[in-house]
Length: 512
Image (cartoon, rainbow, N blue to C red):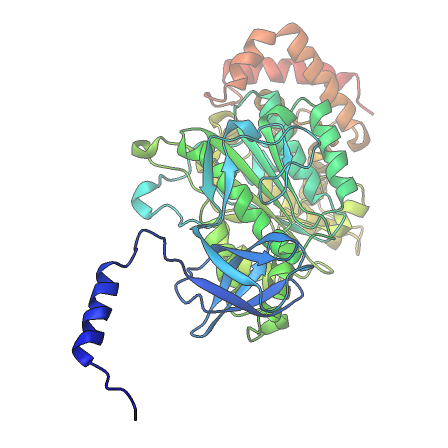
């Protein structure tokens, strides 16, 4: 016969047990890996995890970190930060209790790091006082100010025709090997030469490590490295690191912007970034769309580039300028990723393959390039001489192709073509030789005013060098004043008269 169970006694025992329960221990959510492969782990049981939250996977060989990217009702798709070797089904997973972040601050200047802030240059580990969230909301409308301060690239064709301002997002787009990275590097060098105090953050996304090493050497030689941070990922790195690289770099740049300073972001290149994201999305079983990219690939780049801005005076008036690079196939700017990024940015610099092979470098297309900030971001001096430059160059390119079919041209057309040839020669510029404001303004002024009209196009560069040397040697103080960019350069101004006199004198020595 079964013994009687005293219910009152049992309930009393339960109440006592509950009353004496030790609650000092910490309750934590624990999940379990259900399947893993290709850098993605599927986890069951962590329904409280947030987007981009860090997860810790306990493996037999140690702790492996991942971040949550797919949040579903019954499971999470997490992307591993590193190799998936050692991670197996059945491994315990815990929430770290923080979103993905990287070290930020002046301690990173002069260093080469990966997207997690780990050093790649063989130097000591970085001990930064602060960390910045990899994913962060962009500053709202009221926290911004319109772009009005110039960010001089030192490249005459850009500063005169498609000026870039602090806080702007200007896309550099073109086929491979047309000089896109060269423009970005020259811009970085110019910040050091002109002592602007702008911090450079160069993000290499899936770039050959030999290319990154060459870049580091160049920046050290030019004295730029001590105001530069390089975030590098190679082609053999996992897709997760390639995906994180631009966001991590932006967090590092935002530190300087939020502290009232100015930073320049270079993303080289966002095409590889979109491909890495496509790989991750397909592995996470997200439905593919056009060109197999996921549906949110527009949001991928818009939430990145919107973080670049010019802050209001109340927030310290700092700025973050972005120069994203996009690689096209056979000049097709109507492909999916190029059109997406063109619509997000404030203009684009289009590198034309034909011009590059003609020896016109930088190979910038005057017709397809544009700056949607325009004259607001130009110094008074350069603006006063470059008004009709873009139009004149575009017209010349059209006329030149038309003139091939007939020899009977009227005098006005001939004159326009000859002026265009001289302008084209003038805008040629070797790499690693950025030009200051006074050099750009006086060069454009000389050709625009027809002071070099009798100089053969083949001797324009020589005549330009001779004129700039004489101006700096004989009239250094006037040129230093002009370099401030505060006054208009006109025929009747003192500087205009001075340059006219020197240019005419120099031109006589080069007349053919």
